[in-house]
Image 1 (cartoon, rainbow, N blue to C red):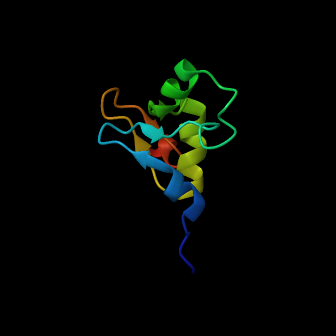
Image 2 (image 1 turned 90 degrees about the vertical axis):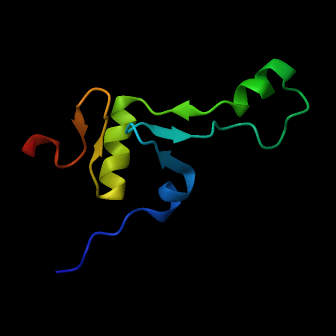
Image 3 (image 1 turned 60 degrees about the vertical axis):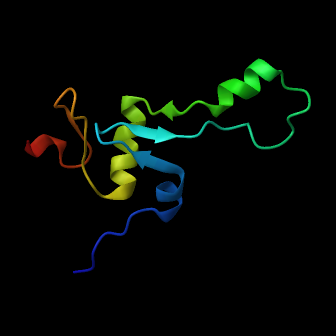
Length: 82
């Protein structure tokens, strides 16, 4: 039986932190920037962390469990087994 392959596009866009949070860069900060304020552009430099529902979706796309270490809550396809 073939192995499940993770979504490579998603792997390039996110990082899973040691505590189990899904970290990414915000959208809209790369081009068409001349009409955007400096405050807005500075806010795009900060890392964004995914909502719990998006973490569940990412776990399904990566075919792996993502466990938040600080809460002990398991999210993803195999969450019902624990």
